[in-house]
Image (cartoon, rainbow, N blue to C red; front, top):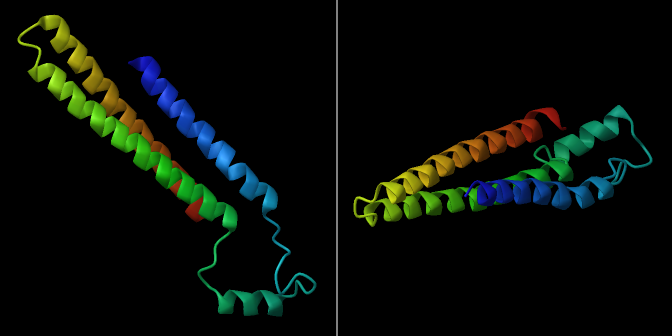
Length: 130
């Protein structure tokens, strides 16, 4: 079970890196109407035209982290439900109850790790990368 959880989280991290690499490579801050005129006036005009525009790298990182957090969160919830089913169908067998508790504990720990990782990525994208 630990191998499955470790592989899920490794897959999530690898996808985050793989899917964000093309956006990082393609991003050029000098493209657009102010490419030849990086003056303060041009910067003010573009900021006024679209004040909600974000760095495309931020958009990609936020989207990928949201999708990965959703998928791993759903997997963790499914494992929590599965551990409940194993526990209720154990029939008092202490080995199966122990196994169900281990699955439940690993699922909750994984869910907490995913929530913290998602919070960290969201904080970095919204506040530090601009």
